[in-house]
Length: 368
Image 1 (cartoon, one colour):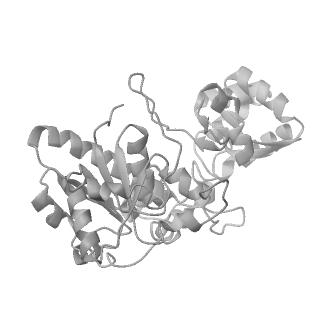
Image 2: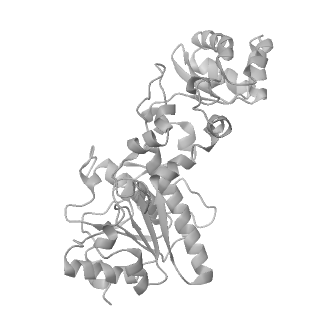
Image 3: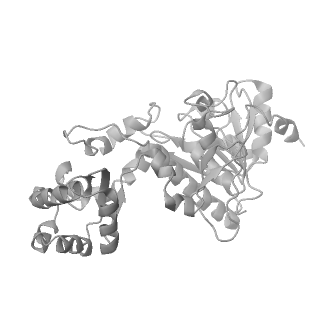
């Protein structure tokens, strides 16, 4: 596998760090999860379908677990020995905590100059909010994402996904791989500072036009991808819901032409409330169609669309089955597969999650 021989120390919990390090583990890295006594918080959150919670195993499969109390001298020394043999360290404490524990980049790099150290925090390592605690919802609020994620009543809706968690994980993964590539030339590691706040804000690039060009807040219900486009919204069918998801002229012309209302296509050139006649037309049409009937028509016309699935329906989707994305372990439990696919050296995820301290022997091995 691509990352065989890479040793990673994972000091993180919840989503950003574990999602990053699980991607490394899926592609062959040895990921050693350093857990405090009591273990990762997610060992105790949510439903179980075996020894572990689904939350924990979904982010920590294929890793090894060592329990260390880094405030204790012997355990601190054991961690330093592990870090001497590591390629990557990922931590997600508030800025300043790693330095107080004497496991910061400067300390570890002085012993292991090839070390790549990725620190993920809410606001980054400096700035007026750097020491402030925050989870995803606070960051979605601060970046403007929550205010732009409105329901039909115009009020912010609770987000379905913790976007800043996943985006910071993916930015961190990219940064770690860049640093590994650069180390091949320089022989030296680097320190990576990932702010969840910035990772999320960077993902607003496609909706920042009104703000950057005119200095104003977008009118959410009128913008191209948040309600102002008749061809970018969901519609109720007789037995379910579907989403039209393509606003290119070819999609618009195809469907409106089929419905005998090609004259309305001009309304769809720009987003806004003037598209309401198209919304009314499409709402009435789809209400009289079953999902199967509407889907067959849209497929024939090559219009971009998707059925509005529940999570169980999403896992049962024929596309997921055809690509073998959903994995099943020896106990019959289902796992989401690695989304990164290589033709050569594909991922070989290990589907077992580690027992707390189940690899404690690594601490003694690291002294040799």
